[in-house]
Amino acid sequence: MTRAAIVHAHGPFVGTRSFGARDRRHFLGRRSETEELVRSWSRHRLTVLHGDNGVGKTSLVDAGAVPALTDRGSTVLPRGELRFDPAFPAAILPGQNPYSRALLALWSPAEFPTHGPGTSITDYLRTHESTDRQGLPRPVFAVLDQTELLLRRSCAPEPVRRDFLDELLTAVEHRPDLRLLLTVRTQHLDELRRLVDKREVDHAEVALAPLTADTAAEAVTRGLALGGSRTAARDAAALVGLAGDAAPSSDPSRVRGASVGPAFLQFLGRALWEAAEGSRAPLVPDSGADVDRVLTGRLTEVLAEVADEHLVSARVPLDWLRAVAAAGARGVGRPAREEPGNALTPGVVHALEDRHLVTANRDGSAYLLCHPGLAGPLAALSPFGGGRPSDGGGFDPLTAARAAHTRGETELAAAHARRALAARPAPAPRERALLTALLGDLAFERGDHPAAAGYYADAARQREAVGDGAAVSRLLVAEARNRLMAGERSAGLTALAAAEGRVHHDPSLRAGIGQVLWLAGQGNSALDVLEGAMVGGGGITEARRTRGQIRAEQGAAAPDGGRG
Figure 1 (cartoon, rainbow, N blue to C red):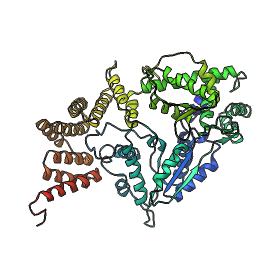
Figure 2 (figure 1 turned 45 degrees about the horizontal axis):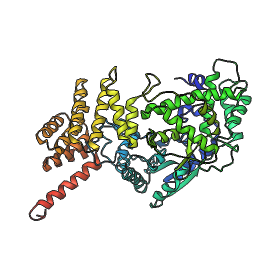
Figure 3 (figure 1 turned 45 degrees about the vertical axis):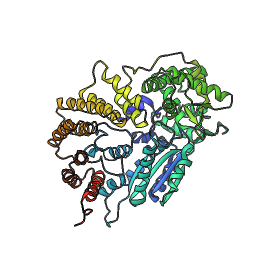
Figure 4 (figure 1 turned 180 degrees about the vertical axis):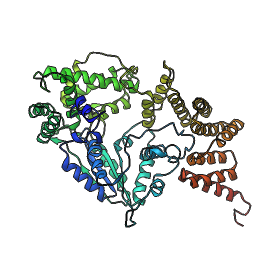
C-alpha cells in the first residue's frame, strides 16, 4: 500500500495497532521522548523503557527510536512478536530454550531454520559481530518488546520464561557490543528490576508518560493537516476533548483529564475517521450518541477478534468488560477470575488488556477500563455470537495456534490446529504440514511420543508431496527421536537413516541428528556429525554441549577413567 493510500485509508490514525516505520510521518508529539530513548539506548548496555498500558512504548520504539538509529547507520536487529515456529520441530533440539530460538528467528530470519536453531544468544552475537574502521566492535542494537508477557501470570511454564530472560541478560553481560532495550508495563517493572539487579551490567530506565492535552492536540492537528484537512485544528480539539481523560493507569486514584492516552486516542480517531470518510461531516460528531455508535461498531469487531482467537462466544469478553465497567463506576476494580460455567480464561483477559481496553492494578488482581468512555458503547452492544473464526477479516488459524502455543495455552493451540485441518476448503499444503507439525510439537512436549511421531511422519509425507526435501529431513529427525523414546528402535533408526541421506547444508539439523544418534547409542557416529555441525556455523551451542556430554560419558565408561 502506498503512503497516499495509507493516509486515505485511516488518516493519521493507526487504530488498535502500534505505529511502525511506515507510519513515521504521522508519529508526532514524541520528539523529545525519542531523543531521550535513543540517547539512553546508545550509552548503556541495557535500557528499560517503562510506562502504563497503552502509553505508546512500542510506537516510540518502532516509529521513533529505531528509524532514528538506522538513519545514522546503526545496526538494529529486527523486532517482532515472539512466536514458536513448527518449521523447526521442537523435538529436533529440545534442549534449546524455545523463546531463545524464537528470538533468533526474529533477529536473523534468513538463517532460520537452517542455521539459527541450536545456537545460544551469546554465540549468535559472537558469530555475527562486526568492527568499525578502527577495528572496534560495532554496537548492535536489539529490542525485546512487551517483556511483561514473560513476567505476568500465564500458562507458559515460568522456568522456561525465566531461563530465557536469564540467557538474554547473560548475553548483555558478556557482549559489550550489545545494546539491549526492554519495554515493560510499569505494573511489572519491580519484577524486572529484581532480575536486572542481579547482574553486573550498566543499565538505565526511561519512563514514558501519556501525552499532555496540548501536545496531543498539536500532534493530531499536524497529522490531519498532512492529509489535507481544512478543519484540522477544530477536529483535533474535539477529538482530544473526548480522549482527554484516557490516561491508562494502574493507579485508580489518578486525576483524569490531565493527559491523553495514545492508545485510546488512536482507537477513537481511527473509528471516527472511517465513519466520516466520504462525507463532509466533521471528524467528531456533535452528538455523543453518534460517537458511542461508532465506538460500538469498533468494539464489536475487536471482541469478535478476541473470541475467534480464544474459541469462545463473544459474549464471554463482552460480559466481563461490562462487569469491569460496573465495578469502575463503583470506584473499585474488577477481579479477573475464572468462574464456574464461564469460559473466561486468563488468555481472554490478557487479550483485552493487550488491546488496551482494560488496564490492571499493580498486582494484576483487578482491572479497570482504560477509558470510561467505553462504558456506554459496551452497554449498548447487542448480544452476538463469535467463537467460530469468520470467513473473512484476515483470521489466520496457524498464527492463532502459534500464538497460543507461545503463551502456553497448549489446548487452545491444538484446538486451532485441529479445527483448521478439518476445515473446508482444506488448508494449502504448506500450511497443512505446519499445522500437523505443530500438533507433533504439542504431543512431544506433553510426553506422548507415539502420537508425536505419527504427526511428524504425517507432516513429512505432506512436505514430500510438494517437494520440500529440507523440511522432510527436519520432520524425519523429529520423528526418529520420538520413535526411539517410545521404544520403537527399528522405526526410529529407519527414520534417522532417511533423514541423514537428505541432509546437505543444514548445520542446525546436523546438531539434532548428532543428539538422536547419541540417544540411539551410537556415540562415535554422533561425534562425527556434531563436529560437522560446528564447522557449518549452525547449532553451535547445542552441538558443543552434546559433544561434551558424549565425551564425558565415554571417558567415564573407560576402565582407566578415560586417561591413557
